[in-house]
Image (cartoon, rainbow, N blue to C red; front, side, top):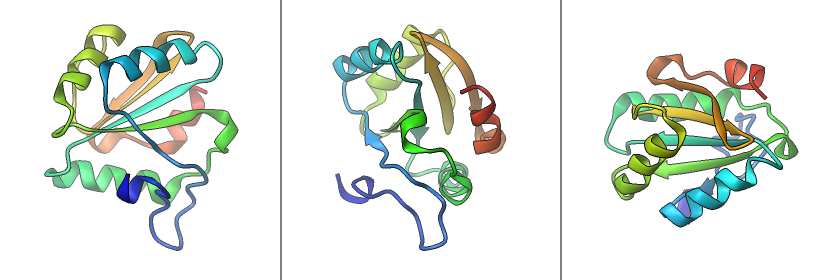
Length: 126
């Protein structure tokens, strides 16, 4: 899992949880089911995109959501593009990159992309 194992950014980062790697359509279907018990956030990231790298950095820097508030998944778009397509199909949210989607009770209740991704706004939909 590399950097995802303890995805905490630099020593000043406020992230308090581990991001889980999303790698398969079967896993996606399960986490959508799991969203009936606990909100699920998915961060879709293109590892070759400067805007996506910046969005990830800002999430790390501003993270102040408690680990028990939601499960947070990271999707490497370049490695798992079919999973991204399945996310769009199941959530009815058009693909963007970078993008954060919050799923509660099986439905997307929040999505944002590019420079508009913020922890503050994500928290408003929890």
